[in-house]
Image 1 (spheres, rainbow, N blue to C red):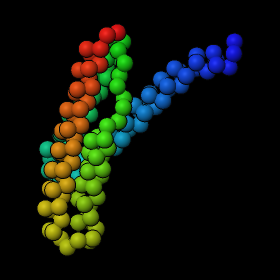
Image 2 (image 1 turned 60 degrees about the horizontal axis):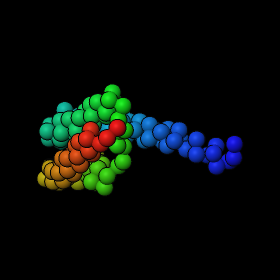
Image 3 (image 1 turned 30 degrees about the vertical axis):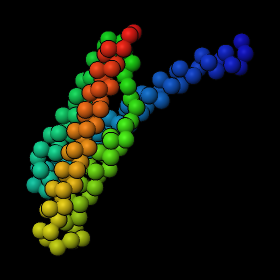
Image 4 (image 1 turned 90 degrees about the horizontal axis):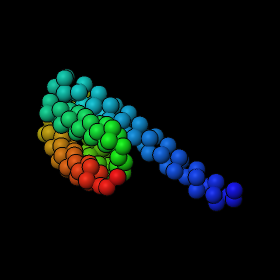
Length: 144
C-alpha cells in the first residue's frame, strides 16, 4: 500500500467528520440564537414573530436532514452567503435590542431600529429558508 492509497482511503472519513462537526456547530449556534431571540421576545424587546420564524426554519432544516439521512442520501451542509447575512442580521438585532437597556441610547429611541433590524433579519432568514428548501429538493431528486 502506498501513501496515496492510504490517503485516498482516509479522506472520505475526514470529510464526513468535518461535515458532522460543521452540522453540530450549526445546531449549537441555532439553539443559542433561538434562546436569545425567545428571551428578548418574552420580555417584549423583540417582536414575537422573529423567534417563531427562526425556530421554524431551523426545525425544518433538522427535519429535512433527518429525512435525507433516513433515506441514505447526502445531507447538503454547505453554508450560503444569505445564511451568513441572516446570522449577522440576527446578531445585530439582538445587540441593538440590548443596547437600549444599558443606557447606550436614550430610553425609547431604540425601538424603530430594533424593528428595522428585525425586518432585515427576517428577510434574510426567509431567503435562506428558501435556499435550503431548494437544496433539500435537489438532494431528494438526486440519483442515489
